[in-house]
Image 1 (spheres, rainbow, N blue to C red):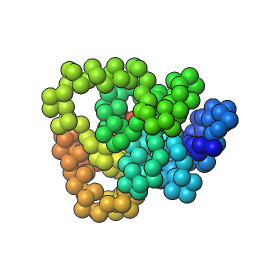
Image 2 (tube, helix red, strand yellow):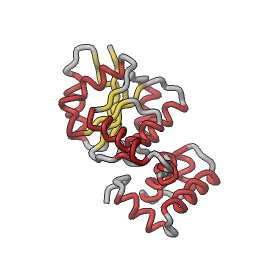
Image 3 (cartoon, one colour):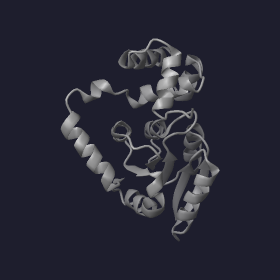
Image 4 (cartoon, rainbow, N blue to C red):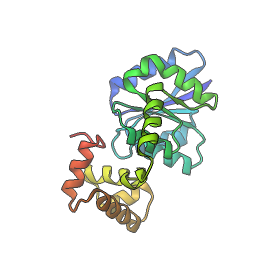
Amino acid sequence: MKRILIADDHEVVRSGLRAIVEAHSSWIVSGEATNGEQAVALALETRPDVLIVDYSMPVMNGLEVSRRLKSLDVGAEVLILTMHESEELLTEAILAGVRGFLFKSDARKHLMSAIEALLDGRPYFTSVLLERLLHDYRTNKQNRSDMLLTSREQSVVQLIAEGHTNRSISEILKLSVKTVETHRASAMRKLRMSSTAELVRYAIRKKLVAP
């Protein structure tokens, strides 16, 4: 039996995903998480083959979950689900090592195919996402990386917007306080911002946190 872990902070979404997964006779749901930190803990405990992770989760977003699992050598593939059509998010997901990316609106139709691909060692991106990524690469490849926050910087900004201090962020992300301060300063410099309030507004606008 292949083990699938589901991480989403909405119970109705988790229930829907569970129903789709359990419709496959060779798959079982090894656990359900309501935030990114819990997803990492359950992955270490249950050792799933695939994690279905909502991008926009409290404490630790889906990309940070993927990065953490890779650093811990868990060996599971990550399938990111998102409501947001964003070229930047797709690019950052790939840079974070994510090999599966799916819109929530497509989950009912494509989720089983996505999981099967990841279990077979193949990446899975819906065609509209691939077309968007290729278009973005062709038209914006020059100096594009200088305009983006890294996924680690995005994680720091998300936690700042959720009200965490530098010290609590360092504990959540397993970084030194100095490193957190460096990421914070770098994000503010790239965004040309000078206050926490501006970072919070940016996080809301970019759907890193709920308004």
